[in-house]
Length: 373
Image (tube, rainbow, N blue to C red):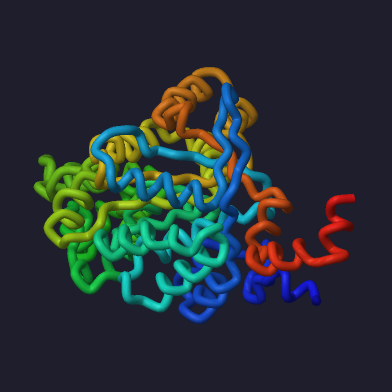
């Protein structure tokens, strides 16, 4: 008997260290990466440990629980060193939740999961969840791609809305469209006066128009208007990230019958480093508070190369350290974990033992005698 008669190898699985969450936007590359993903199923049980250890299947189970229960906190951050498959898992989760049940991408993810599960019948729970819940609004954030959290979230949300037939064309209810129209309409003396005012703040009209989604732009536009006309404009109120999450859940996901809002945040430790140096206050807290207010309809999952407290203590000090610590408290201690991808666990999914063949082979002579010895 040959080894291949006793063990089936995952011929599609591959160890990839070059995956980015943005690969979701390249259809061919995205599907190829999904086909090569290897789900880990088992992880050590750590009684009394400060952090729980999650397999890839465990992370998927946790997110499914977030959208099938009306209680609990689902603001999660998972830590793992470079090369442990964080981005590959994030990409796989984005496809499973965002795509339609009947899509090729979801079918591929379910096939990969089925190969890793000890019993194929276990797949039915995942299939039933996806069929019942359908598409989710998945906001994909990549911490090395933006400087300003508000701007990054707005752009990612707009992109996510454009990826679903039921939400395509929806306009975010924000002030900046009116503000952009006003700035673009400035002519003659008013434009010169506005440019002179903005120059005092090291910017100009074209730059301000391009940065309207950034934190602080709202006040700059209002002050420019007041400088010209001695009164404040009626562009609508500035909406914070908590309000934005509530709008996405209650005004989009619920009426459009989407399964919920999932925020996937890759390269979270890199984002935190920039966030600390930019000295922004409260934006991360706003986002996480919005998730907390939508239990059962939203979840936040971040992947970090370093423990978030270690990042804060390394790059911040004094009052800034206290501010960041306060915001990080919105990530519950019991939802901070480690992503488990020990080689033995990956190989357990990569190589599957054919139970019937092993049983039959082990009972034959002289194999049985050799195994007994």
